[in-house]
Length: 99
Image 1 (spheres, rainbow, N blue to C red):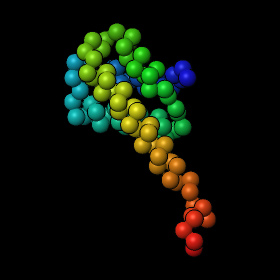
Image 2: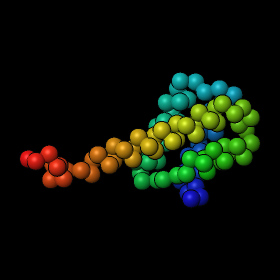
Image 3: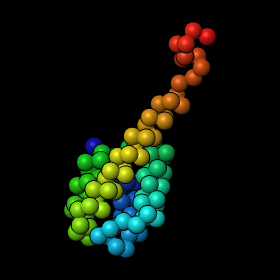
């Protein structure tokens, strides 16, 4: 699945926001988490492999570790959101607890 324009815009926002691309600070990580959280909350889906490929080819991310961290954050946020979204879909009527 190719990245949507909205996701690419957010990846560019991350690239612009991070001054030192050789390491991520705690505040950088918090900001990145918020960006991915907003994406998934607005029903944007992305292929984590495509995000990894985008950062590898973007050009300004010379050090691998921050790129891997961002990709891992994108995966974590998307997986976490999908799990909690699934839990929100279930209602009391769907309960097989016998009540």
